[in-house]
Amino acid sequence: MKVTFLGTGTSQGVPVIGCDCPVCSSLDFRDKRFRTAIHLDIDGKSIVIDTGPDFRQQMLREKISSLDAILYTHQHKDHTAGLDDIRPYNFSQKKDIPIYGTKEVLEQIKMEFSYIFQEVKYPGVPAVIPNEITKSPFVAEGISVIPIEVLHYRLPVLGFRFKDFTYITDASFISEKEMRKIKGTKVLVLNALQKEYHISHFTLEKAIEMVNIIKPERAFFTHISHKLGNHKEVEDSLPENIKLAFDGLKIHID
Ligand SMILES: [Zn+2]
Ligand SMILES: [Zn+2]
Ligand SMILES: [Zn+2]
Image (cartoon, rainbow, N blue to C red):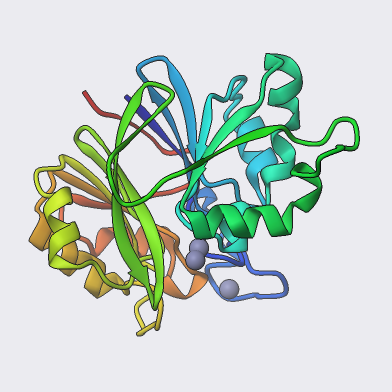
């Protein structure tokens, strides 16, 4: 399995429009973050988790020429806004793309992209096959997935586990019961927004605490704000087994 970080930034992206802080004006390419999403190359399938507003640029940058399925963590715009840009895959593959989300996520997508779901469609609109999921294990295009329900303030969000890899973003709380689904994972991705308290996201300190409880071999933090600090300085302060993810980072997992 190969994991590619398509984007590792929080909802506004980094740099933030109009901001001249040291992170937003940094020349380090790792301080430039598209909105959070990953791509999985797993058992011959090409899967993305979330299609944020930077989806098109992410797929172009990574030269991803096929797409088999989209899994949605939740309905926030920084995770869904790029759905219209799946059209090149519809055209080249000549098929509808299966999308997976909870009832609430699919309802929101149907409302925000109503033109995709009309009975009589305008020619060339995106073509999707909605698949409703819950927090129970499911199979997407032949790939086994264990969803993990986390809370994002009060909003339920799904993390996803594939074999020994677990991806969780936009969490501020994980219950004991859902923690059991994560145990034993070798590679963990977790959101770490900033150092100061935030109502709907783990802080850096809290994310480190979660890694120490879950004890994966390696952990990567994502959904990063410009307020967290410069990539290099923050990463240098972290324990050996924890890294900050950056856009374009690829990890291989057996
Ligand atoms: Zn988000
Ligand atoms: Zn800034
Ligand atoms: Zn969110």
